[in-house]
Image (cartoon, rainbow, N blue to C red; front, side, top):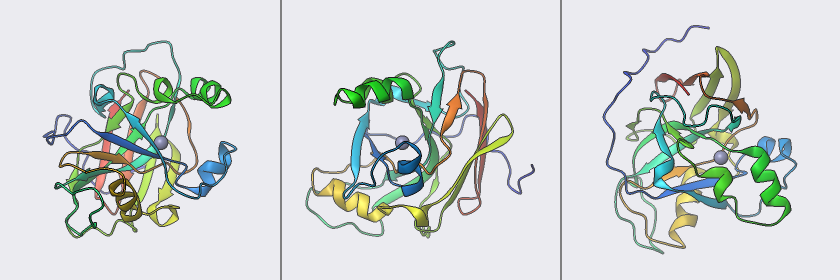
Length: 218
Ligand code: ZN
């Protein structure tokens, strides 16, 4: 399939990141359902370590023999310091991109059964994949389409209007607990269609609203 936008260069400028990576789980009802989870009453939050970050177009993943699940997500880049318990403003976000929350699903299922933290299923080298950022200025975060292709096949198609907790609600929720800092990243959850990927797979993320069409090999 062809796309109207240019593919991004392989090594775009990397913004200054704080190292904090917040992730929201079960933020689309159809995805919660596909994994047999209940729709949550408040946001499900987990963390990835900064050492999990990788660009979409970067060298091969460190794990040649393991299969992961792709989770396509809108990722927010916090633009300014916001104090705990403060209000969210329109200038809270500097930029956004599409990212993949790579997940060791079988490991996560085991951890869930034992009521243990998900960390080793969610945080490992290359587990937080980022496409190049685009400015958040003038973006309506409730109107972002997102799409993932793996090896030329469309695997996930979503839209932020279907989020259970919209972006500003997520920010507000996180701010009820802690300060947010410029360079904090927030993975906002995945729509349905999660499935297997492994090293060597060709990935393409696409959004008309973001004018994004970026690719890379895992
Ligand atoms: Zn996720």
